[in-house]
Structures are given as C-alpha cells and as structure tokens.
Image 1 (cartoon, chains in turn green, cyan):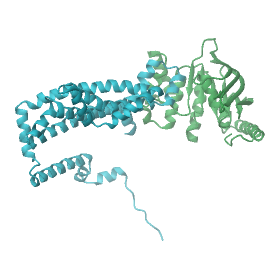
Image 2 (cartoon, one colour):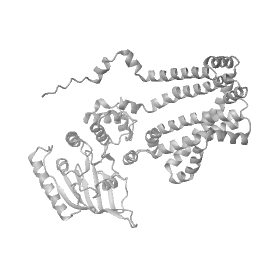
Image 3 (tube, chains in turn blue, purple):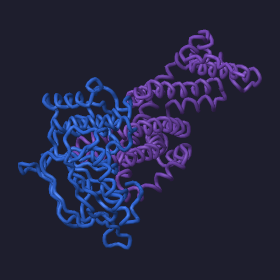
Image 4 (cartoon, chains in turn blue, brown):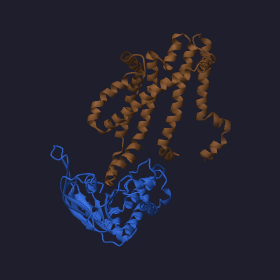
Length: 254
Length: 273
C-alpha cells in the first residue's frame, strides 16, 4: 500500500509563454492505505495530467508530490490505461513479464495467478491481436496488479468498452482489489462508475481546482442494482449538476 | 402478398458446393501459373514474328553453353562478391543513419536533402559516375550498389523509428522498464519490419546497380558477360543472362525475404487467422 501526498500542486503547459495554459491549480490531497479514490471531472479539467504527474511521465510546475510505500521506501506503481497498451509482437504472458523486475519462477507464478484472476489463464500464449478489446483490457489490469504495486493508477480503463463488458470488468476489479489490498487512484468521467468503485471521490472543476472531496461510505461488494448505491449516485450527480450550474463552461460530459 | 426469402448458405457450404477443379482455377497459384504461361506464349509469338527476338530454344541453348563453359558460376561469384559488400555497407550505414534521423530532428534536417538527392539519382547515373571515378575493377560496382541502395534503407529505418508508438513508450516509462529491455523488446521489434523492407529494397535496387556498373565498367561479372553477348550481337546469349538476373532476384526475394518477413510478422498473421 502507498502514501500519496499532493501539496499545492500546479501544472501550467507553456509556462511563461503567451499560450500558457494552467490545467492544475493549487491541488492538495492525500491518499493512504487500502483506499480506492476516484478523480472525477469534466473533459479538460486536468484528471489525466494529474495521473501523469503522479506516475512521473509528466513534470509539475510548482508544489510538491510524493509517492511512497507505507513503510517509507519509494512506491512501486502499476498503471492501467484507457487502452490496453500491449506490445502486439509479444504474447500475453510475455507482455506481463515485460514490466516485471525479475524473470524467475516466483514472478512467472505471480503473472499466471493474476491471469487466472482475470479469467485469462488459458490465454497466456495468445498474441494480443487474437483477443477481444475487453480481454486485452483484462490483460492490462492483470499486468498492473502483477507488478505488486503499492499504488495502482487507472486512467478511464473502461471508457472504450461496451457497457456489459465494462460492468463485468468493474465487478472483477472490485474482487481483485479486495484480495490484493492496494491503494488505487482511478480517473473517470463516469460518476456512476466512481460511486460503485470508490471510497472517496475527488471532484475536479474546470481550471484544475478541487471542487469537492466526497466520502463514499457503502458496504462492499457494491452492485449498480443496489438501491443504496443508486441513491448515492443520484446524490453525487446532483452535486455535480450544482457545480455545472455555478461554472457554465463545464462540458456536458459530467 | 408474402415474399419468400431463400435460405442463405454459409461460406463453408458455398465453398463445398464449388467443384474442386473450379476451386483450383480460382486460386492464387492458378493466377501465377496463368501469368507465366501467358508470358511464355507471348515470347514464343514475338520470337516467331521478329527476327531479332530470340526464341526460347535458342536461349536455352545459350544457357546450356554458358553453364558448360563454366561462365555462369565464375561470373556470378564475382558479381555476388561486389553485390554483398555493397549491400552490407548500405545496410550498416543505412540502419545507423536511419536510427539517428528517426530520433533527432537536427539529424533529420541535416540528412533529409542528401537522402532525397540519393533517391532521385538512378542507378545508371551512379554507374557512369563510379566508372569515371574508379575505372574498371571492383570499386565501381561496389560503390554503385552502395549509393543506389543506401537511401532506401535510411528512409525506411527512419520512418520505423519515428513510428514507435508513443503510448507504448509512455507505458514503458510508467512501469520503469530498463532502457536495454525497451530497446530489445519495444524499439527493435517495432522497427524490424521497416528494416526488412529497407533491406529488401536495397537488394533489388542494389542488384540493378551492380549489374549496370559491371555492364559499363566491369572486367568480369554477370553484367559484364551480358554486355559481351550484346556487343557480339548474339541476342540469345544476352537474353540468357537477363533470365539469370531475374531468376537470382526472384529466388533471393522468395526464399530469403519472404521467409524472414513471415517470421518477423507471425504475430500479425496469427491475429488475422
């Protein structure tokens, strides 16, 4: 598990130029322990930029960010992207081994275990092109868990899938997460999905500020058909509607 | 009024309903065989119509004579020696320059113009120039092969390097995949198809180059021998060598490059099967 601390974080693209564009504006929050945090907001509010900064792909302009494991060493990260990002010339198992630190019996066993957990135990020797989009995304999820990350970062992992496949994968994700005890930061523009999965929802507003930090206190496992989940989803949606009314430029995607 | 929709058959049922002789005639193999038969018949007709077009029998006779004199193997040995050195140099230089061009905008700006010039100069011009520079000997065909082939390798490799997916590179960075593994498992496989295509071009274009240089400035070799029969006004001998040129390149392409391409892209073929 990880401790993620974000303190007064700003990100400006093209800083110091006439076309400078601030996408994150003095963001502060922290996440620790086995917590599932969703970051929700309209398109262009800086969700993916924030994830890229957390993962180290992007640098921040000012402020501070630290990601450590709960025992203080640098955190190991796992990343699930919008699309599976598999190397098409490597088999499923070799794709999972590509991101592992070691190539030994223990690691191979772990890779096979996570492939089994996502229901692809018999597909280890398949090429990615032989799998459906949903199966490829399951490989992406298994790959992220198999590196035994302290912090798992997920960037709209189900946004490219059809509704039924996405629902199945959400249920599977909840099961694996419950077993693996990871800290998860999950970006989505789907409030319904966020309520179903999260312990906390951080709402970003246009301009890259935190609008609200909502605690979701519902028992697990959750299913969309559960009335308590549906009620809370409606409540969170209403709050976002209020934000939308206050900031007219918010895109209709919330 | 009601309409009756006829029962539609599956593709398997449709295939099994076609007689086997029609399936053979409709195959790709049949299309290839048809081409060769048509070309042969056209050749026979042209030879019958025009005195200066040698017929198949006289060409075969010339081929047998050249083989029996030992001319074929000794001249091809010379040609392959020059061709191999020229192509090998063009692949080494082309891959290095191509990778540098693919990675650096500055290098791209520097090499873009000379590569374009190289692409636009035909092999025959290089053959003339190298004969003027180096005279008769091995240097002219080797340099002609190199200069003709290298721009094609550079362009293909540079395109391949630029085409390595940004998403996959970001994924590798996110997971902290070491540089050596990234080059081995991400960059090289991504570029391999382009390198293969570049080498394939280099071989075909370089083959033209070496034969032309030998034609104009060789003291031996397949191109030189074809010129010998041309100068002697013996068109059957000349045509025999032209056939050998074609056979060599077709065999090289089908036996070596087709197999290499099939192995390099087996993941893609499996995905589409």
